[in-house]
Image (cartoon, rainbow, N blue to C red):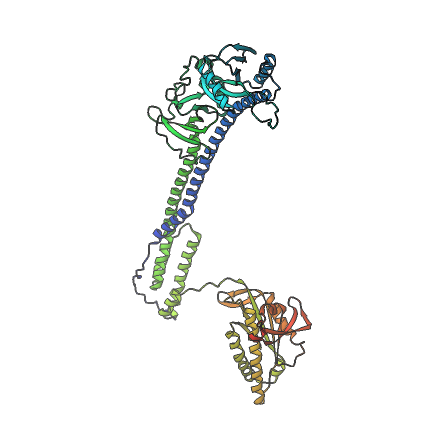
Length: 639
């Protein structure tokens, strides 16, 4: 017999909306790349910039902290020594008129404070005793009233009992010709222990103790700090005078300074052009550093072309002179260029990688789109039943797409014969509809019910099959709806038994109570069923029920051609064994309902249970027998 060749009509596939696959894949892959990479690049750049800024800021402030601490360590011991000498005189341990004793004390203080170039004691009559570090000797100056600075120092000490720094000034007595900083300490004599007088009361004014520190020595000390930190430290007196700088460390550099203007001006400080320009230009904020916490800072462009930048970090301190000091450091902006370029390079590198990823996404999308377009064309031909056109589909580098292309080719070859034996409308329907995948299993907390009829085997042994089936259908048609009405799911009928559960597929928080209520309803319905059968002279039945709550795996079980929605687990086995235990329960009821302790605990207070101490089952605990539902008014607090 010859199989006729199928008749085919060329019909163009219908036009569908949407983007081409190559565009869609390109946009999707680009979107995924941007969504995945762009936040990482942005956050990485932001984090790197912020961390680098904080590290640079912390480093700058730590360097400045070091400068300030070293400066305090240089000056504060002088105050301590002068306070010690003044206290010795005030307490009477040292007589300022005892030249030999004073020389020992003062020269010892000079030995402990090498930064001090000399100490002078100016008495209230303006006679002066000088103690010089250079030769370790003391000298008398007969009359110091000719020096205005000395007169002013004595007058201020009479009304101000605290030690004070003053200067800078050109010293008239100590380290003559040098610019110094001076610490003035008022001298008071011992207090007579008159009645009611305190030891803290001030004694008679004796004069002024003055310690001098050379500004050149301070600059040398600052230069040592600069060598340790690798930056240029400086101290400004106010904003316009240079007090200390490594370039001023030699005494001759400021020798001959004018008395009325002893310090060089900042804007004409030719020894450090960067420092001379600290205030010359509008300050630029340090955007590459995080905001300072204890200091201030800015940078300025230097050089003819304005391409060289200098960074200034500074802090104002008070208490060391007539005007406030500005202690700071400056360094070339190129010193932090590596850190800043690393941050910028990280951002640019991320953008380059992002661009490469976008380009790769476009290329991959185009390569993936070619076989997909071939599959789409083949599907359209199969839909139009043009199977001859599906011969050799394009192949690519993706194994799954190649397998799909081969499957399409084999399907088309099979459909050539399939359409010969079936109507084309049915073929189109079969081709258009695929098989839905089976849902995966999930874990649920449920209550499981098993029922069984006693003596059913003996009952059905000598009866016709039609009578037995009719009997079962009559009973199950009355029991099944009760299970479903209570929210239960009938899993299966096993001969004369029923397996059901509550809590799936839809979650039910009161699954145990629902199951217990259904069990009572089944018991009542079976009793009514038996009453009707007895009235008609028919056989009555006796039913056992077992209820247990626990965790099970629920879902579709089987294969793609045949699946069952069911539950699996130890809970199921325990519920069935509970139902079997009903054989041992001594009860006259037509329906015996045995409930595990787990189900009893979850059912709540609206049911009455009678324990069966003689029945115990591993995994279920003490078995309780369900008796009746308790009305709500009986369980209310007022009852």
